[in-house]
Length: 272
Image 1 (tube, helix red, strand yellow):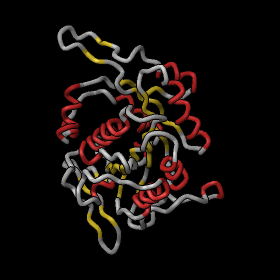
Image 2 (spheres, rainbow, N blue to C red):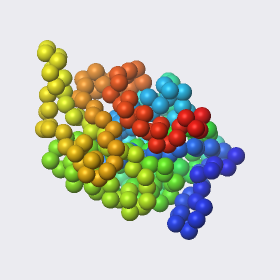
Image 3 (cartoon, rainbow, N blue to C red):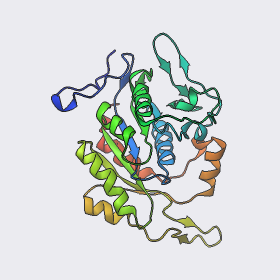
Image 4 (cartoon, one colour):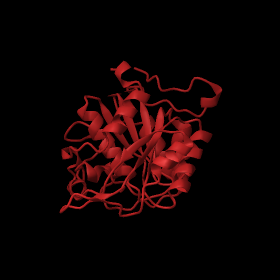
């Protein structure tokens, strides 16, 4: 079966076909203008939440030099399988399909010391050569910034939208605008902004503490006329589950609004 995710006009001449055995209905990239804001965490939470709703989900770890998706899903020992037909992604405990450079390395702590074009080419191959099969949603966990890999993904993959991740710091406006402007330049729909590390909750009194200052993400989203998808707190339980590779056990309602917006904007109810 050939995927419908193919370029159909001159504006999409650089779009690549995914593997002929794939039928990938929706593609979403999670990115930010800088590192350290929690893109992998947000990507993983979105994958877990969408899988719980019955969707077939895959995660493509596009952060080649700093991959973390296998670790978060308890896949330190996972390996991708290869055959004459292509590469098969690993499957998590709840059957989320994941593909990462770490799944192809002999040792998962081996550094990937490659130049930009080779890194970008590898990410592209994860789209063209991996046998994802039937997916309702493929999430791209992007590296930080607006360099080779985001450019390659934006040009090569027919993305249905992006989610911008930010944090409550003074640079938030500039950071978000970099990702926003890149997406706009490449004609990629913007699903919205989600703020990570927004606050912490005092275990004694339950008061919210703004550890990194007052949130600015909602104001920035309003200025740019794009949806604000919610705030994620600094949660020790969530951090612990990620460290243990047990993120699929996490079950709080932090991203419910984000999931509702994602399903609505991508017309999921009409595609099930």
